[in-house]
Amino acid sequence: MSKIALIFGLGPRIGQPTATKFHHAGYKVATVARTPRTYTSDDFIHVTADLNDPSSVKPIFDKVETQWGKAPDVVIYNAGSLVPTPTNPLNANMDEFVKSFNVNTMTPYCAASIAYAKNNKVTFILTGNAFNTLVNPFFATQGVGKSASAHWIQAAAKAEALRPAKFYYCDQRTPEGKPCYTGLNGDAHADLYLKLAEEEEQGEPIVVLKA
Image (cartoon, rainbow, N blue to C red; front, side, top):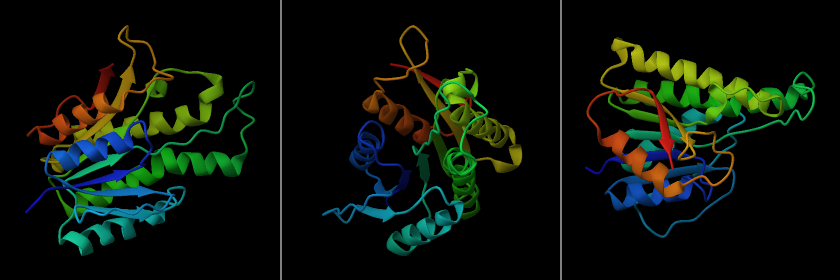
C-alpha cells in the first residue's frame, strides 16, 4: 500500500513543490488550503479548511482515512500567519493575534497530536523560520507562535514514549547562515522533507536548511 503525505498549506513556494516531490516518490498526497483545488489523479485529494480554527484538523484526517483507508505516514505543516507590529510589538489586534497563534501553534499542535494518535510511526514536519530564536519587533506575533511550536516539537522529539515517530522544525537560512526573509527555495525544502520522512530514526529536531 502506498504511503500517504498530508500537506497543510499549498502555496507556490513550498507547498506545491513538496506535494509534487512526494507524489513522484510514490506517495499519495492530500493537500489542505483555504482555496479549493481540483485534481485529476486519484493519487491526490484536496481538503478546504480554515486553519485559524484548530477544530478543523480532525475532519481533515478523517477524510484522508476515508479516501485511502489509512492514516498519513507524513504530515507537513506549511501554513503560517503574521500580524505585523511595525513600531509597537504590544499593539497587535487581539483577535487577529489569537488567530495568528492558532495557525502558527495550536493548529499544528493538534495536527501532530492527531497524527501520532492515528499512526505512531508518523513523521511530522513544520516549516519554521528564524523567529524561534531571532527577535524582531515587526514580527513579534509570528515569533511567539514559531517559538512555541519549536519548543513543543523539540519536546516531542525528545520524548522516548513517542518513538518511533519523528518531529522536525525546519528553518531555511541564506548560504551565509542569515535569516531568509525572501527567496525561499521550494525544491530544497521538498528534498529535505522527503529525506527526513524516509529516515528511520529521529534526528536533530531543529533543522537549518542553507539554500
